[in-house]
Image: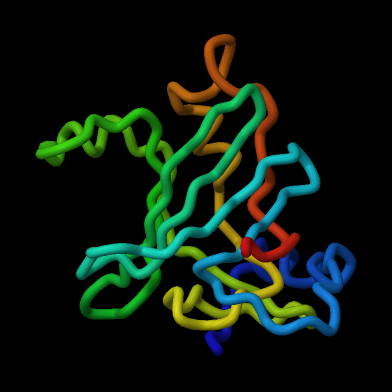
Length: 169
């Protein structure tokens, strides 16, 4: 577990106790199959198994209103190890340059997880059980500044916290 002292992260951790959804007494869900939801905007996150990726530890898609889908990945940084997440919108496929990737990245940052007691940790790799909640710091403001938001994109900004809703079969 990582002790996080940021006031905003602390506030979110305290809020998680009220937002927690009881996933029940059923078997734990692996993170690679977890489904999360945001109460503010009905945004959802569906994890999927990461295939053939040496550096990517988690893969997911974020579904927003109006059918907008963002592709997400998590890679652990070198040096001080942290799960660095990226959300991308309409990225080109195949061989892409760093500039092309930067142009289609709509959010990036450390991804945190929280248990049902509000204890904050760094997001683990996909081989672990799904945490109760995920925290994407500054997600809403970053997405509001992106090309995915607005008249031709989604209109409801998600909050930073997503709660475990279920498990894909």
